[in-house]
Length: 400
Image 1 (cartoon, one colour):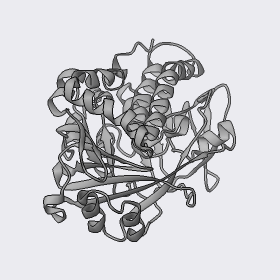
Image 2 (cartoon, rainbow, N blue to C red):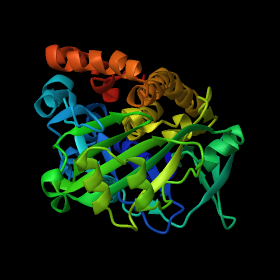
Image 3 (cartoon, rainbow, N blue to C red):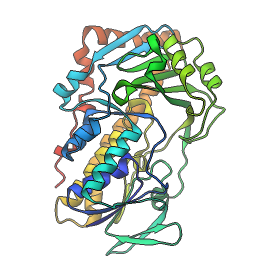
Image 4 (cartoon, rainbow, N blue to C red):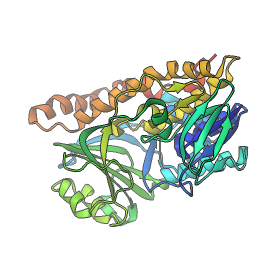
């Protein structure tokens, strides 16, 4: 089967590897001139790592990653610990795969290298998809410049502004959440004693929160800070922000947060408005299918956007390969398997947005008090509450 994949990001490259794993011919079409990613970190949870393990690339993915010791929550101003749940050993023992922090550029490089080993010359850059057409016998990808490429299946892995989704569904109406996110990566050596713990830590406060964790074998610190505001609504990961604005947004917060922001290079501090989208009820159109953010855009408050795309990639490939079904039936089966899970993750992400930003004193007590008790008295309960997410193994699902 010839599979055409639109988008050379994490979801698209993983989809290519999964389809190649099942014996299909793949071509990835990326509109950028090179495969890269703006410097930022990503959390790869055990449910996603199981896909990389099944593909035989776990070693390559983990090579430059960092394995956090725990999941932590702290008060943003005082730094007071709300809970700290051991993670490094537990993730492997309980969820049968590690929990990793990795630089996006390192993950893209690992996936690109693995694909080149399996199917050389499978990636075409400077190839922007504009839409598609299809017949009963084939799908046709329309590229800028008038080129048309024929294949058996088209996978739209082209993100939140997907041209494939727009062709399939028409224009969408994203909803601004009232939150703007900052993100940056700094050298840990520049932070001295103010370096954050070797954990995945969320710092919570009134109307804002941030997340810190380490990358590249512990040599870098990744920062994501989210602030409630309504006066800036640019939905772009590549929009530079002013350091003075970031410092103002987190004024009075713990010295660790201030130290990170002070250490940021002025040309490497980005901010973007967070938009939510209504869930799609249909991800397929005949021989064409969506995955990842193109199908189910995720808010970042559960760190599962990439993980869901990785799971999607395996599910599409497995469904296309599981039986003698028609292609359209296989793609519909993929949607039926994935829709409930991704909808649950989307809902959990939205709930976390509210929990992290409790502004009223009573709201903080109502939410953080039970979290503090759970973390100290019954950490196994906290682990147990994540089993549905991290314990899931899409490679073991029956796709027949």
